Length: 606
Ligand code: ADP
Ligand code: MG
Image (cartoon, rainbow, N blue to C red):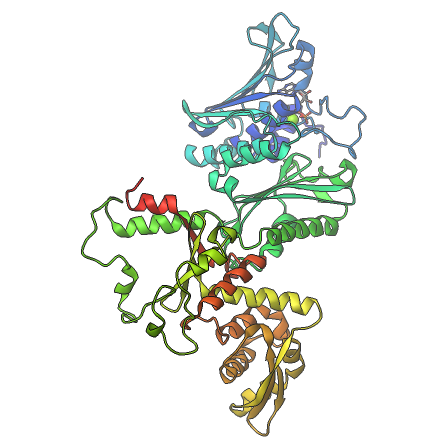
């Protein structure tokens, strides 16, 4: 057996195996170098998805010919002046990227410092280096990489189509660009410009606006319009950034970004914290959009975990997780009943789609109140405030107010969700706002309100109850009655005072006040069913969401129940006052707001 030191080209190719997985990883390293060099403009060019050619040029501080010569040597770096791995403030520090890339490709680097008369260039062909030679180039640095992996054919075989590789490159550039709004980025792919982000210099005292502008340019404008600002601090760790409203969600987590001290990282901790913070507002398979920036003292985070530096280790992960979850929940609560503007856009899109023609199509013989056509409840689909009292007799039908009375006493403009004007199909409340209309799904909204007030009441130590005038005996089958009997304490905490009542029956004495008048037997039977399905270990509280939705189903605002004006307006006011009431537990909206301007467009008036 002969032991020997490997030649440096082999060593570099081994390192390249980790650092340079594909064109996008080479570009990541090169763009990071440009950022570290203080560039204000970075241009990337690709051919064939990077397989035959890629280049990164910047206007950073450049290198002298001596520096150029040294930069491509293994473990050569200008970024660890004190050899202090505990205190890394640059994106690079390993001194590995350039020699690794150069060992597997035909590599050219041209660089010029601001005060030099000319640039210098160095060529490396599969690891073999030429001495620096004078060249012509403006101040800054340009790296060109041809035939990446020609020296490691095994890796070459793993490259995907140019399109896929270009997609990875775009993703890489976008991530880095998010963290650096002050730098302009451009990507040209086979001659086509695919990314062009102008620099967004920070306005006086408002870094967040510049960042949001950059994020909007990358994610899309819906994000900028529907993002909540995050700014929180705990024990020297600062979290800033923007998080989307729950109703702006998508089927995967691809638009969730975390940056640690300006470095894009993919971190399980982030995804877990985000899931936790949004759990109450989104179905399991829906994901919010967000970009969060953590800043913490360099010595409290280890970035030297992974050769590609995409993973980090926090000294106190619980602190970081707590900060993220807390800040997100806080921002979501502050957003109140707000639902994203995309809801209205989607609704209008759907309306236009249904019309199937130009928005200004002449009116047909259909009645203007098209909802009547569904066939259901043709006779009295509309409970309108203007209707004559005789049209709606009976105590539980709409209390009607004369037109004008509502308006003078409570102008629509004063309330974000407006003043209730009508109920349609016993399911939707239509309200008028200062500049549009709001359509509320009364059942979804009420379910959300019940859930939110239950949570708050339970956290505050108890749910308010109201006694039934006459206790209600509910007949069940025996196992169902036993299940209820086994959870009396838990039910009491939820505001339901129930006692066993002989075999196969229970008696209900008090109910949660927030439910109003309820269908007691229906609720008890459904809860007994829920108990049969729930995981016994979780109990009722562990399934509060489901319990509340069961409760809301038997409350007074459920779908199919006619509401009077007071009830409708009270629902709207409660929504305004309740955080998270703009969406149901699955991230669907509880109301849609249409602006007059948009409605006018629908009718071709604009
Ligand atoms: P690292 O970034 O970890 O230091 P690299 O191999 O990526 O290692 O780069 C080696 C050195 O080359 C850097 O430390 C830096 O001094 C210099 N360098 C690389 N790219 C540039 C650039 N675009 N502009 C100026 N200097 C650069
Ligand atoms: Mg580097």
